[in-house]
Each structure stands twice: as structure tokens, then as C-alpha cells.
Image (cartoon, rainbow, N blue to C red):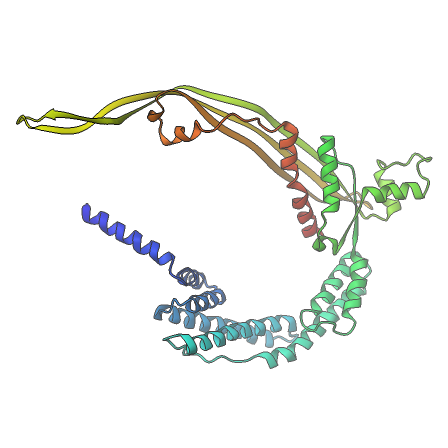
Length: 410
């Protein structure tokens, strides 16, 4: 049992030391990627491990094996693409780009080992830049022609596909022909205008949510989505003198039509609040035997000796736990104005909790264990109000909703 303990201790010591060796973590990641068949990542992590001076034969071999497998995978994909009647030039470009990145890493590692290492890599890097330059124009033209094809249809979905194609052109040849101008043209034609109606629920919270959702649009969400703001609604009503005819912001369908909106977003907020409660556990007895000094005694042979003097001490604990919780459920849907069809709906649920604990005691403080020794230092504190808890949870909702809307519309 004793030998097992020391063996285990030595193993733990070796493991802890290994973790802090430069490059060891990258080596472990490389092995994991290799095992899972992700040879690209295995190559890059093995290379990083070696450059961090974790230079062992096993890492060099791992790099070489992963490189060969990754290179072969790219070459097989290239053969498949080139054998097609209509070659997908963008896809072919990405395969050669992957090969180039792989060889760039090899070239970098060979240079590093020539200057800093005891090992050598038995592989020669190859340069595919000339091939990439040739394919890049074919790939750009491939995407450009696809954009022109989608552009012929006036519907928004086709215009969006056209815009994405013209945007993709820039990945291969920036500014190819008039692709930038065509991207802007088709993007604008594809934009969906979304009227955000008033939300149902706690007035303060839903006003906040509505304004934040409108104002927190990111660049990604703005590409094909335009939100009609509250100010814009007011301007539409005032500019067209619609108040006298009984049209207000609540007349969403009418205002949406006048504003050129395509879709309407409606939402409701449900709040479940658990009020603050305090739970008290009392009569918790703590006992401990402590050393209070030394005493002398005579052993069985009458010899005077010294030993520790022990004493049992006790304390009685009162343990307090205070908690509160709010759960906000935000349900929303997007409706097409033309046919009232529900296009998208979702629910976002956010929770906010408050928890605090402390303790008091009577008796001898020395009897307390580490837990209660810490808790007696804490004091009672006020729990946040219902509105505070609700708002903390609400603040996380707009970003989530905008991301979901962006994914839906893009």
C-alpha cells in the first residue's frame, strides 16, 4: 500500500511537471486532432509544439504523418473537383489554398529547425501560389456569373443570393469587374424592412427590450435587414397627417404598409418572480478537541513526562440563506404582411438569481470548522428588488434576439 502511494505521488508529480513544459499542451492537442482525423490542426499544433522547444522524435513523427495525410486529402479532393464537367472553381481554390497554408507551415518549421533544432524534417515544401493566382480569376468569374444569374429575378431571395455571390467575388479578386457596385445594388434590393410592434408585458421592461433590439443591430444583421424604429413610425404618421384619420402607432398593419415594411415583429414577455426568502438552520452544534497547553504526568515506571493538554470546546451555529429569482420568457414571431404567414418564431428564456448566506454563533469560536469560520465573517445584506432582478435578466435578451434575427435573415 505504501509503495502504491509513492508510485501514485510520483506519477502526479510527473504529470504536473509535464503540464508546465513549454509545448507539451500543444503536443497533446496535436495527438487529439490526429486521432480524430483533423490532420490540418494536428499539423499546426505539432509545429507549434516543436517551435516551443518541445522537440522530441515523437512530435516530429506526428507532424510528418499528419502533414502527409492532410496533403493527400487535399490532393484527392482536387482530383475529384478537376474531374467534374463543370469545375467549381471557388471550391478548387479553397483546396489549393489549404495546400498552400500547409506548405507554408512546413517551410516555416524547416527554417526554424535549421536554426534552432536537433532534428530535421524529411519533407520538402511546395509552392502553389502561381496555381492560386490562375484559379483566383476563374473563381471570381464563377461567382460573378452566378450573381448575374440570380440578379435576373426580382424577388428578394434571388437578390440576396446575387448579393452574396458578388460579395464572395472579393475573396478571390477584390474589385473584380463591377462586382462591388452590383453587390450594393442587389443587397439593397434584398433588404427586408421589419416593423417592430409594441411588446406585451411589464411596461418598463418591454419598452427597454424594444428599444435595445432596434438600437443594438450589428453590421451583420444590417446587411439584409432594416428595422423600422419608433421615431420613424411617428414621422410617417405625422408627415402624412394620419392622426386625424384615426391611425396611430397601434395600427401596425396600416402603418407597416405605408412605411414599406415587409414583415412585422410582435412579442410578449412573461415574468415569474420568486420573492426574497430567508431560510434559517439553527441549533447546529460544532465540537472540537483543541490543545490548551501542556501537562506533566508519571508513566507506568514512575518517570515524569510531558503531554499536550486537550479540551473540548463547543459552539452553536445559526446558518442563514437568503435567495430570490426572476425568470423572463420572451416570445416573439415574425409575420409576413402580405399573407399573414408566420415566418419565424422563437422563445428566449433568461434567469437571474440572488443568493447570499451568512452565520452567527454562540460559544467558543475555536470549535468552528472552516466553512462556518468563513460564514460568520459575512453579514446580512439586502436582496435586489424585483425590478432590479428583472432588468438584469432582461439586459441579456436583446443581443440574443438580434443574433437570431441576423441568422434568420442572412
